[in-house]
Amino acid sequence: MSPKILFKEMFFVCWFLLICCSVTNILKKKEIYSLKERFVTVYSLCAGVLMIGLYTFTDMAFEIRYLSVVTVMSIPMIAIYLNQRKRDAVYYGILLALVIGSFGISVLYYRQPAANRTNPAGSEYHRIAQILVEEGYQNGYAGFWHSNILTEISDGKIEVWDYGTTSGGLQIENMEQWLQLKSHINHLPTGKVFALLNSEQLKNTQWSVEPDPSDILYQSDQLTLFGFDSYADVKSHL
Image 1 (cartoon, rainbow, N blue to C red):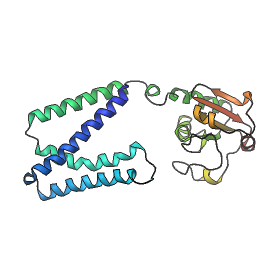
Image 2 (cartoon, helix red, strand yellow; image 1 turned 180 degrees about the horizontal axis):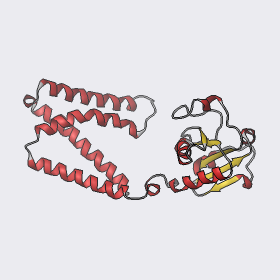
Image 3 (cartoon, one colour; image 1 turned 60 degrees about the vertical axis):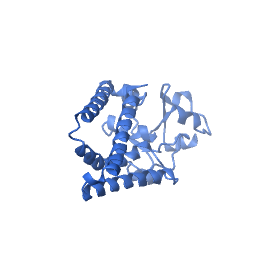
Image 4 (cartoon, helix red, strand yellow; image 1 turned 120 degrees about the vertical axis):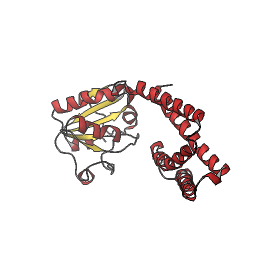
């Protein structure tokens, strides 16, 4: 198990235990809590249950990061609980050990170079941006996880049309409307146009005309970079 996964799981377990202890303690010892403290605890708990239920019993799109709202909402409830246990040295000792352990794992993890602890293809972005700039490409297409980072790495020299997180393959008509220039929705890239695909997108792209090997500017196990003469040239292959 990687340090990243272990850290996340330790954090989740610690946080979940604190929430359970907070709820259990207020149910057993209601008399030691003020009316305001009980209200905040019940409110935090209901908000968390509502958020989880919203994604569990509806067809709304879900990502694990959306639960960060539940984490934030539970902070007041946990703070109230810890304040009630502030004289319990053993309890605080255990909690401190868990925090230090989690912190130690996170330090070991984040000491690694960024390219080693994120996307395996992370170390390739600089090389890809360099190739595009050297070859005179200023506009092109890439998925959500690759688009903005290319613009950032190239200091804005590369403008990328983001076609979203789909793994279904390259598509150049329906652009992602989140974290993208509004002009990309209605305007097409001009000049030479590139297309960056990960291995899954490459496999699932339905080419009407297979690109020539000479169209490949860069290729690895994770990423493939195509170069085309224009938007019309890209479209003629799809």
